[in-house]
Amino acid sequence: MFNKNKSTALMVFLFFSFSTITITGNYLPVYFRDIGLPTSQIGLLLAVGPLAAILTQPLWGFMSDRLRSTKKTLIVCIAGAITVSIVLFQVQSLLAFVVVMFLFFCFLSPINPLAESLALKTATEEGRTFGSIRMWGAFGFGVTALISGYIFAVIGIQNILYPFLFFCFFTFLLSLKISDIKTTSKKQVTLMDAVKLGADPKLFGFLLLAMFISITHRTNDNYLGIHIVQLGGKESLIGLATFIGIMVEVIILATSWLWFRKFHEFFFIGLSGLIYAFRWFLMSVITTPEMILFLQLFHGIAFGLFYLAAFQYVTKILPKELQATGHVFFITIVFGLSGMIGSLAGGSIIEYFNSFVLYRVLGYSALVGTISIYLYYIFLDNQENKLVSKPSNIGS
Image (cartoon, rainbow, N blue to C red; front, side, top):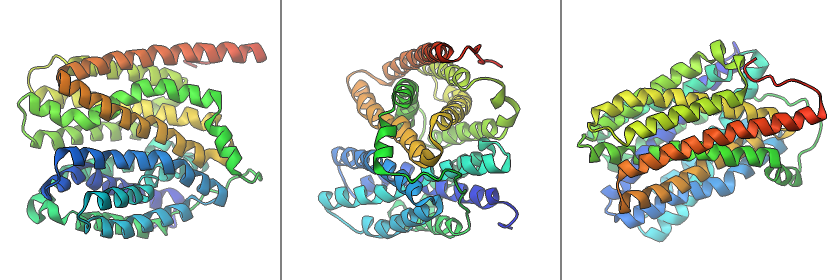
């Protein structure tokens, strides 16, 4: 069935690769707690993953562009993640955990960013929308988030290695079936090209402003469960809330062909910022945990709009030969660095105040990001009009 087109194998690959991330992202902290690690050590270990991603993801993106093969890079990363995971769940000392966790996320963290870069290239070649392919990753994440709790209730969290290897093994097999998209650029990519890309003021300025919005998203990822518990909710609501948000995201991605090309990318980024701000302000005043389930409907809408638009805009301003590097750099900054900032700042705010104050701060941050993005668009539009006499096309 994989010979019909390149996107079929890639969609199944995304389903399993995102399912793999669900296992590690949602249940590694539970596993660490189960083996008796104190909270302070768990927090340290959870910071190792984003650090490894920030330091190594752009290098994997560069290697993909250098080799002109996302497929080969993915195969190496998945094989490395499988190998290191077997060691990870055998070690006992904190120092060993830190070292092995760093190596583990050096291989694991680039998998989905590279796959998403390949998804965009595949969608362009086949005349599809990026969202119609990317939605399968979100679907895999949501389904696995819903069923994994029941799985661990049966097998025990101490056996986390086995479901991880199950999803990772199928991801590896599917990586052998996916196809690269050949670049039309003849230019040989160098390390200096990648360094210059990271220092590009247009790209850097956009990522810096977008972080005001993305930080709020990543902070909520880390502390939604705490907010639900503070409101008196049960842990079972956390998985259900995640599933609802992801399923709405799938719908947004699946229907992107109906609405996405009608407006400029900055229109949707700003709109997502407003939706985020509305959601966070409501989260800061609600009184029952069940209301969060309703507000999770806004998660899929806001994230779907933000991610599609931001990813598409970054693609527009990237050189053809450096797209994998740029895409991974985008995800590293907008989600990796945002996750570290959100984790540290969010934890401090909750410790000194409470989660209600945290969500109020997130609301203001999203508003700042929205206003900044629109001002940035006006600035860029004026700069372009100085070079070429051309009316703005936002909303066209």
